[in-house]
Amino acid sequence: MAHSLRQRHNAVPATSTVDAPGFAVMLYMAALTATRYNPVIKKFYQRLLGEGINHSKWLITACMRKLLAIINVMVRDGSCWKNKDSHF
Image 1 (cartoon, rainbow, N blue to C red):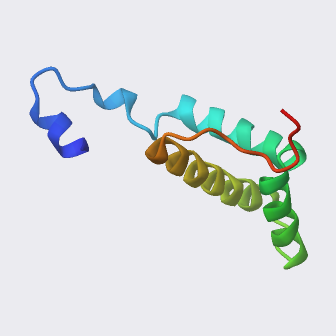
Image 2 (tube, one colour; image 1 turned 90 degrees about the horizontal axis):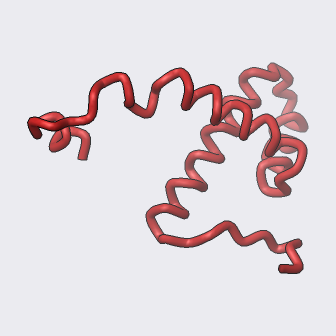
């Protein structure tokens, strides 16, 4: 998909790519919050801590990657977040 975007005349500028600093900060903050309040990410974070990994930035980066993978699957399938503990 990215290759075809570069070929078009009205292509998206390179500054709006996924690795833009604003996106990374947003994803970092989302992962940081998710480690406290999202049961899936919190369990993942606690498992990594239990394995003896206690480099906080590495742990948050792993949670960012996990969160991004979950979001990609949700977008691909056109689904919404489904929390097992939710009563809605």
